[in-house]
Image (cartoon, rainbow, N blue to C red; front, side, top):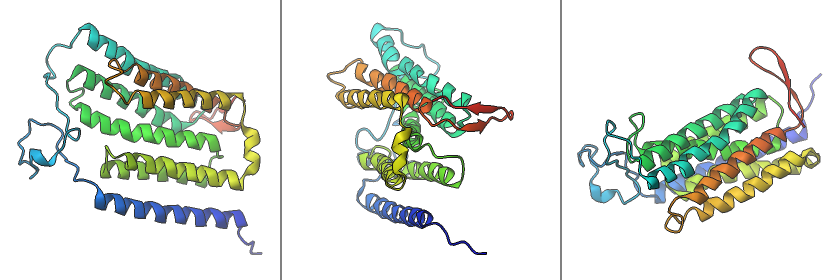
Length: 286
């Protein structure tokens, strides 16, 4: 016989529809009030190539490089210090990526690997003042923005630790679409950065309200991850003042602590059997 849908399912569908409406209205509002974002990525292009004049592109929206791609790589001490603090510190994300791969968490592994690669190449291109793989710092920066924001959204997904299925996939890919669209709308806009993150936090808050027993799933690894994440955000905001942090040490610490947080979050997920591409069963550690 017919079985009526569970009340929790109705609540989930209503909440999802409400979030979609809110985000759509925010997207329309941001698009109406934001500046025109330039599509040029190099200042040495003809200013009228896209009917955009130099005066329409305020500082920070365009990137340019002064060193030719075929030229020598700089080896002065200041540059090498910046390579260490902004480029090599991205290696701290690798353990989390490996842990995701070992546990069969493919989505988190791919997003984490993309964050590691784009952040590394963005900072390398910026510090070396040259194109890398034929893309300038601005292009790498936009890609880094997409995957860095998506990594934070994926962290919220780790807190929920949903079982495989429709709801987990819908939240993951819906978040990816939202992040890409908002970064295309305003790659340097704080609001376009925050909307996907705040939306994921609202989903998490709703999840906790409808799953109060979820709090018992938190363990020592989750606690360590939250502590590392708190330190990461302190370093991130301190690193925004580049005049007082000439060698970007705080930004490097942001990489270190955030990579540490992701590693512990993946270890803190509830024990659940998963299947790898080879068919082998993997069990997550407690």
